[in-house]
Length: 167
Image 1 (spheres, one colour):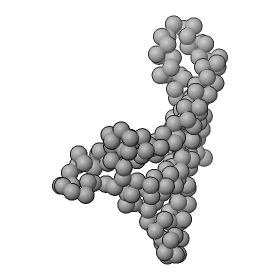
Image 2 (cartoon, one colour):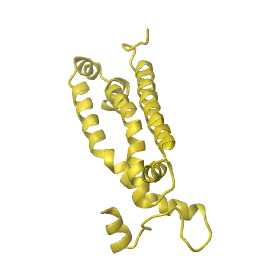
Image 3 (tube, rainbow, N blue to C red):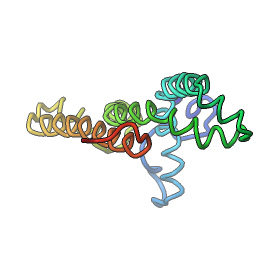
Image 4 (cartoon, rainbow, N blue to C red):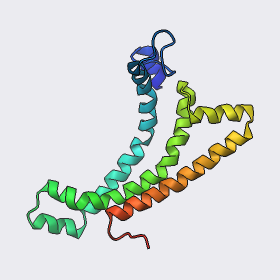
């Protein structure tokens, strides 16, 4: 839909590739070609992130320590930045750790549709050509991304929330 609307009908953005076929390969040309794929890749996760953020903040704001902080005379901004945000960020960090491999799988589809060279396109081309060693390497890389994302999320949660400690 994004290609149809913004590239075909409105002719605001290019439909694919990294550069124009004619002309110099400039950074500005690369950025213009990058707008549509990055927007599509980012918009896929907006609904999930906004739902998690909203529910996490609503849960934290209803806690007793938030009422106590407000009764001590702290402003709304101080209550949010000092008390609510660190506690509401813990589930969001866990979500970020789980979404790291999802970015690679989403890039697989996005790179194929928009004609960008990258790991996703390499995976599709290897799948079509039945190059099993490359496919096994890509699956192993995705497995490492899952492990690394969860490890990074656990370490960040331990830094932000003192109740969570690695022992």
